[in-house]
Image (cartoon, helix red, strand yellow):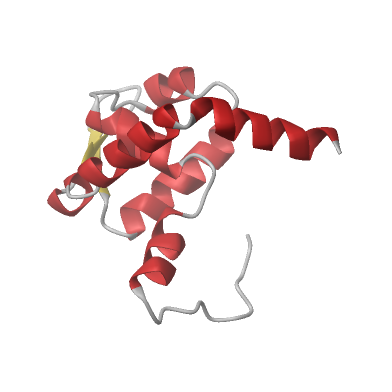
Length: 119
């Protein structure tokens, strides 16, 4: 398991947000959990490019940062569901605004991203 050698810089709000939301799939996981996709298998179907291992690691980090909670049902086979905490729910409007900005600037963003990949 990765062990951080340098302590994170937590001097401002942007540093804190980066620390909590850094991860390729975290914002999407929060969004999909908010939309009602709560089981790990449902989240895997919504994000097929992500490996199960990476999704589990990022779900664990979101749980450690108190943005989501995990409920384990005592059945066989075990059933697990995730839900947003009140703290996690407070991020939904922020994620929504980011998504709207991305939609508004879709063509420009695609162009600059593809240009960088071609070089």
